[in-house]
Length: 194
Image (cartoon, rainbow, N blue to C red; front, side):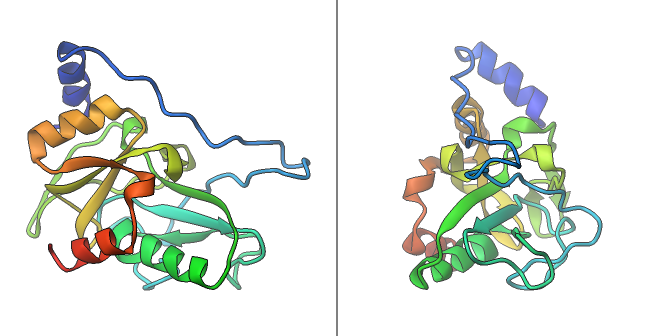
């Protein structure tokens, strides 16, 4: 089933929920400017595991920190090909080191026309990489424990439209959670297949 089919199903089930807010973006010249998401296409590699972004499917992510950036790109962001295996473990580790977060962006499946890909490893979400396919991770609804994979295994599938996330659960199992529900125990449980 693709996104358009979910949109139709959501409308039949009672309409769309309100759109989650977006992280405030200020002009680049502003003292408190929030950095923008960048394009992750073109052979970019995960800053945690070194895997190419895109081929593995599933949500991608970008992290900006106030005083830290990858050595090869001034100002960041750090970028990731999977949320469960890379972005969140990396982020939790950096928080333990006292790093200050400026912005967290992840794929917003409500912002793209998607189709679940049938792969040898099982049904897998696609891996969009354009800047406009990312949204503030803290405002999204995530589907967890579904029968659809993310990058490298179990996925966290983010949606800005809560009704779309609920429709996804109706079709593919799992449950919905908010950003604040994502902690080390949840991520480790997903990685361990629990």
